[in-house]
Amino acid sequence: MRVLGRTGARVSILAFGCGSRFLAYGDEEKAHAALNKALDLGITYFDTAYGYGDGKSETWVGGVMKTRRKEVWLATKVIPRKAEEAKRIIEGSLKRLQTQKVDLIHIHSLAGEDDLKAIEAHDGVLQLLYKLREQKVTRAIGITSHTDPAVLRKALERHDFDCTQMALNAARVGMASPSSDPGATTSFESLALPIANNKKMGVIAMKIFAQEKLSGKAPVEKLISYSLSLPVTAAVIGMPKPEFIEQNIAIAKAFTPMPKEQMYELSGDLAPQKASIDRFFSDHVDC
Image (cartoon, rainbow, N blue to C red; front, side, top):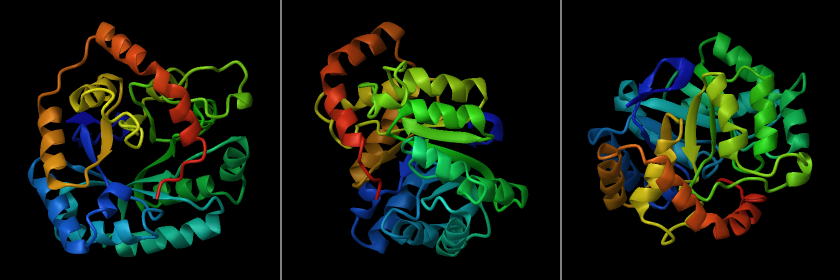
C-alpha cells in the first residue's frame, strides 16, 4: 500500500486495469469473478473508463461495486472535451458503476497542444471536473496521457489536478510528437513525472508492458519492478486471465525497489524498442 499523493488515500501498489484486457474475459460473470478475486487477494484500486467498450467495462465493474464499493478506490475517465457532453457521460458512468460518487475522474488520454486547449476552454471538461470535485461527486480529479510528455507537463504545471496517470515503463516511452516542444527530447519519466511529484500528485504508472510490445523483451517481474521503483503510487496493469492476477499480486507483494544501476541497465537494454513504441502510441486509442 502507498499513499495516493495529496488525496491522502492509501491504495494497493498494483491497480487492476479494466480496459481491453479486462473486456477479454468475454462475459460479465467471468469479469465479476476476476474482480472479486483481485479484491480478495488485496488489490484495492480499480481503473475503468466509459471509453472501454462504450460503457461495458463500467457496467461490469458496477456489478461488483453493488456489494463491495467501500473496499475500492474507484477511478474512471471521461473522453469528451466539451463540458456538456462530458457531464452526460459522467452521469451515465455513475449509473453503470452503481455508485453515487467515484474517487477519481480522469480526463482521458491527453494528446497534443490543440487537445489541451480544448480541455482548458471556458466550456471545456476541466471546468466541469472542478465543479464535480467541489460538489463531492468525485473525491479527486486527474488527467492521463501516453502520447506526448511535453504537453502533459504543461497541463500539470498549469492546473489543479490531484492525480495523473502516464506511460511509465522501462523503455521510457515518450515524445511521439517532439515538434510540440523542440527542447524536449526524452520521456514521461524525465519531463512530466517531476512536475507531478513537485505538486504532490498521486501518480499512476500505465503501459508497463507497452501494450505487450515489451513482453518477452525482459522478465515480467523486472518490468513491473522498474515502474514501481519510480516515484509513483501504483502501477495499473490489465490482467486478462486469473493466473495473471495471482502472478502480478505475488510480484507486488515481493516487491523491493530496484537499484538505480539496474534500472539504468534495463532501460539501456530496452532502448532499441523506444522509437517503435513511440510511433505506436502516437495514435493509439485506449478502448
